[in-house]
Image 1 (cartoon, one colour):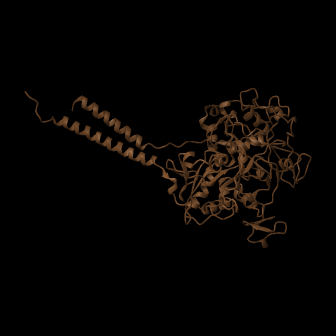
Image 2: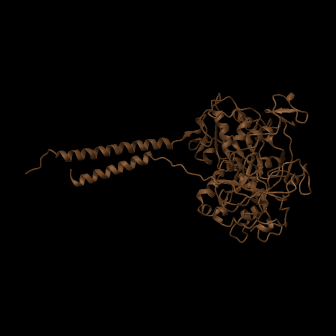
Image 3: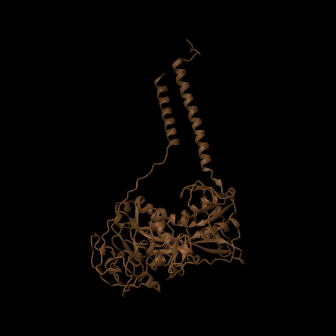
Length: 128
Length: 437
């Protein structure tokens, strides 16, 4: 077999192989990381209901705990007891705001707008 | 000396191999072309058995698919055909725009999804409408009212049917340290924009912010919750669909992948829940709220799936799925009997049919819960309008205890077989547990 024929055959075989691979190629899967939650939990001393650290516009929270962003304190939870209404929450909500702030043993996570939003005064600025 | 007509044996073998390969290559090419042609030629949607054609948002797609496999395996079968280019397309597909009639489904999309009884969640088949086909939509799905779509008003021949509750979640990659966000922060990030001098740390990298247009339910509802106008695009990168927002902050955005602390997105809560191995819902502090709450009692652990805060009104970002269907203008009944059944199933008016579906979820109640939705019967609050004010809600037949059991594995409610098993304080035996009503 001549050299030129060997090269031609080899090229064709390569093309055939490439074509075969392209016809049989499948998708690869992907790996997903599963990163756990490493938040800090603070238990209140009074129990029964939570006492949010951020009580509204212009309030000051108790400072960052274990977070690198220098923003809000960690989550707040309480002991599971019967609901005890306090000024900052109600056990029998009737209005929309009361539902949002209803007493609960659920964990809440403070977000202080004044500390986190530069220049925040309580009024939303106009959109550009 | 003249050349002999006889060929050299080695040259002959070489040519034979050469021609054989060419022939094989040709056969392979022809086979590939034929295979490719058949793979590229989708089924004609109009030829499917008893089809009902829908269009709308992606938040409901998995829920629709779960119902669709049951209907495809029913006797007789009903084929649910659906495409999810965005919520307000439900209105585009159903409601004429002034004197302009609705567009045909062939004009609205090149391919549609449909499900067979053996299909897994999120793995539909594809069909299309022939060129020039004039079939229009029978129904639409979106998680908000028509007025949010350029002021659309429903005509008398389109009805609004309310389905399960869907949450909206702002989320971050699991590598992020962030746990909470406020409505005001959302206003700054998605309204004023990142990198414009109004940055809310750590979300300060514009290319790490996933967003959606305000023709999507998620975009519209978040805008309403943050005090942003719904006729103005939310800033950030529009990812087009719920799952693609997840993908954006975890893989497709180099900026988000490089700086997960700066990454932020939003999507339906059921989509975020299905991706808990990658992302985490942020607790949300609504306007007028003292503290930020996640949809569940906790972000992690046993009570991280109970949706208690959403059900009781402390998590603000939720709305019901709406299914819009062609109805008789006088009776307001769904005209298409197969569509009527579908609407009855997704609004819990009728139980799922007996089916050969591979998915053996026995009831629509279980199917909603499995999908990450909240059935109306598990809610303790309702609301007026999209992201509207909250008020107390007592379902006609509560299922909160059952919902707690299915999502957390336990409930404090008393098990029962009949009302006679229940105390006076919770006299109604619903789905195996004593409820107040």
